Image (tube, rainbow, N blue to C red):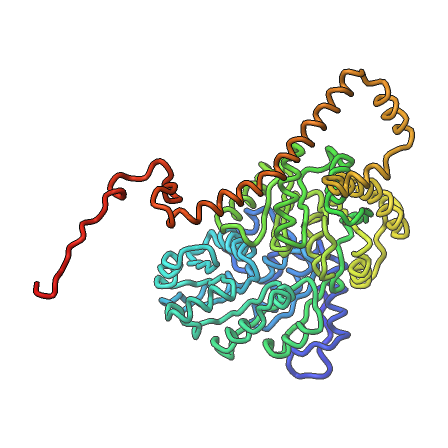
Length: 537
């Protein structure tokens, strides 16, 4: 490898000018196969583990970041997802951890991850590449018992991998000290920003030593993250092996139009699954909301698809079991929210389907980055409705390219909505007419809207009715009239009877008291004894 030019504007090699950074990029991407892991300065134990894992040549982000990380410099790594950013900080950390030992409640390194799945995946990398070391790795994530995590912290942890919330919980309980942290890693920094973890990260950064080494890694670099790097990093080396927010060239992208109704979108997805057929080895289907994940999962299972679901409201054990089943090939389709979009390493994913267009354009890059990993080819399909056009425009602006339409451009979406909504609107009108037909008003509407051709048939049926039936109807009407006349005469008699009954107290031989009638109890007929009390008594 040729020597890079010395930075012009600083005596410190940390400060690399923009021209020098561009040259580093050109060098690492132009000849990726000429560099091996042995050239990066890793220890013999780490190299042995990497070789056993089947890797010989580092990816561009690994080749650019590992040498600087081994020197103890702050690194700002930017690369598209699926390029090996996790190993870019795991391998040098294991090498540096060979010297020294952990103390109780004082971890030596700290890695922050936005989700539980990413944290568990980083732990797997430490187990794989650190198999020749006796490193203690503690995983602090939600959904797991505090007691088991506290036991690991009490024994001493060389590596602490955590989500921000659970880390602060342990710190506030007094079970964790961060004054011994030597290396601080913030993985998926832009995702941390989206999930609102930046205040927690700022608090955590104040709890660890100022002289720490800080490593930032992300696939996208929005302006807010750039400002954070000025706060967290000290003279960082920027390693950018691909344009920020770019998508892998190994992924074939396509857009599919659909009506905005959920039933139509599900039908569109099933048509895509049937069209791809045997080409689908396994696929991830992304939804924006957790409720849509559950609804789509049930629909796919109902239609006979081998599918699973993954979202943030699931129990941690259920989430890990679902991911394990998908990795092992026991599930062909995984319906997921964006909790599965960031950094999950599942190399064999052949397809990605965006059931919903992501609201944040950066999420599109991470979603489709689940396929086409490690040099493999992949396909991504995004279902687009008329209301998604602004999000689609933001995505195409971010990735600086136009995505091809599979079945016509966006101008035909209006026709799709009109055609697909017409049958259902007519059905709703029929439903309203039938429901309003109940009662007198509904019968009038039915009579008004009924076809005129049916009226002669009714008249003919009435005129041809048998004479006996007509006579029976007439006699029934006469009986009803007579009954009504008799009912009108009854109130006068009841009034007279009531008037006579009010005067029963005036006549000792009058009728029985109202309320008992003939069933008056005998004791009420006995006259009470009258006691004459004289003045002398």
